[in-house]
Image (cartoon, rainbow, N blue to C red; front, side, top):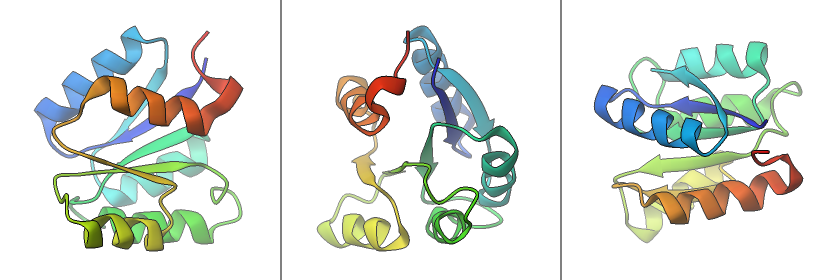
Length: 125
């Protein structure tokens, strides 16, 4: 079973997405801010990270840069999740180190395709 670190500070978004991912067979670990995401990525070693970009403590862009700079976490694929839907927002997320980008509100089928593409054979069983 693939483990996904969901980094989301909005309780309603976090609850909805974590339950839907759980039903799809993923193990979900939750962080509510960028610092917690960095700490949990190192300790939990998730297969993939879903990173909200607008976070307290450390924003998603900086948390992604730090994760990609660390030898222990740099190989973990990161999908940016953001309400910012302009082309420059996607460019900014990719420059920070995100492997993919998805906009809110989340369209689960589209997000699941992106997750599957990045996980390859590590998807849910």
